Amino acid sequence: MNRFELTIILISVAITLFFSAVIAAAGSLIYGAFWGWFGITFAFQIIGFTIWNSYLLQKDNAIAQQNEVEELRALSNISIKLSCAYCNRPNDIPIQLNRKNTFKCDYCSQVNGVFMQFTSTTLTTPIDSIKLPINETEAL
Ligand SMILES: [Zn+2]
Image 1 (tube, rainbow, N blue to C red):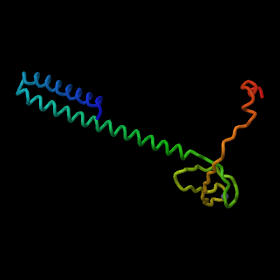
Image 2 (cartoon, rainbow, N blue to C red):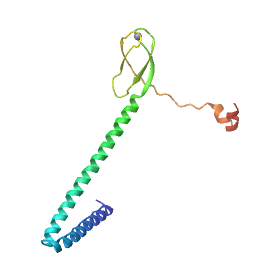
Image 3 (cartoon, rainbow, N blue to C red):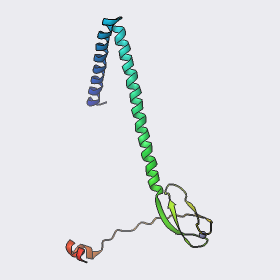
Image 4 (cartoon, helix red, strand yellow):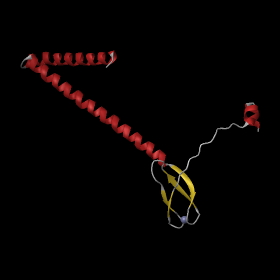
């Protein structure tokens, strides 16, 4: 816990105590003792803060989970064209990188497996694009 957090906590406690004292002072004028009102007001505030905090935490968790679902959905939106292994006709199929992929051919209804292979390459820059000034490149 750093100095900033400690200051915030101390200020929160001070406000809670002050608010409890104000309610207790007002309440004890009408009925009962100051400390009775003080204790009840203080307890209600603590309960209120606890409920509010757990609500905020759950809201944050829900947002985080929603983001995760959307990321997974974005991954599943990758679509490629593959030829059927049985009839060799092209099919558009959605691909998910995080699971085993299969697809049913639109033409012959056979179920195909998908084998994914990735290859690394060196990055090359065409020499012409470096030599030409920008406006000359646009004219081409
Ligand atoms: Zn097929």
